[in-house]
Image 1 (cartoon, helix red, strand yellow):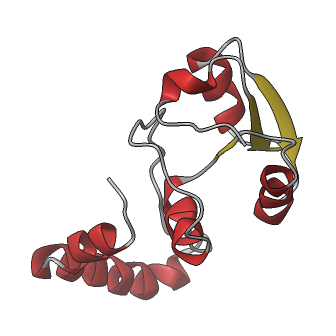
Image 2: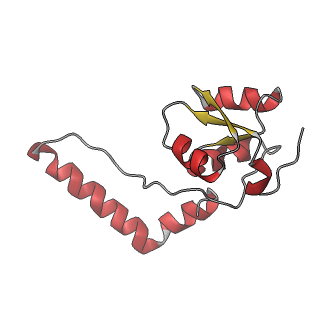
Image 3: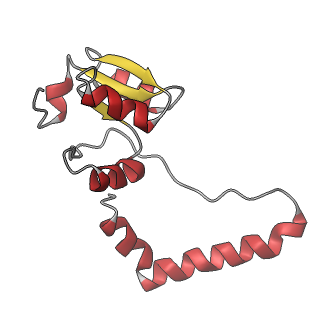
Amino acid sequence: RCQIAQLSDLTTKTIAVLEGSSTIAVVRYALPGSKLVGVESYEEARSLLEHGEANAFAADTSVLSGWVQEYPEYRLLSARLSGEALCVVMPKGLQYNHLRRRINEAIARWQTEGWLAERATAWGLP
């Protein structure tokens, strides 16, 4: 198994990416010499890594942060290729205004109290 210490170590390596994800274009741009292998799930990516069929897996930091806690034999590189905003999705319609207000209030409270920053640190997010 090859050792990957930094992003440049992946320039000609095989990288697993989720099929249809925005990560595909980002990795193609940042590492044009790498070979991308599409996977349908995080478990499929882990299987490719375990069997030496991929050298790395590029995906969402928030999910991979939890993943490396569950599988400590893996680690995240410090380099971030992109940042995608996370959001809360709700049904359309005025009948959901009360729900929207409650969610916005909760998020604002968590930001003010520092809870969101604490969670980001605990989860290893930037």
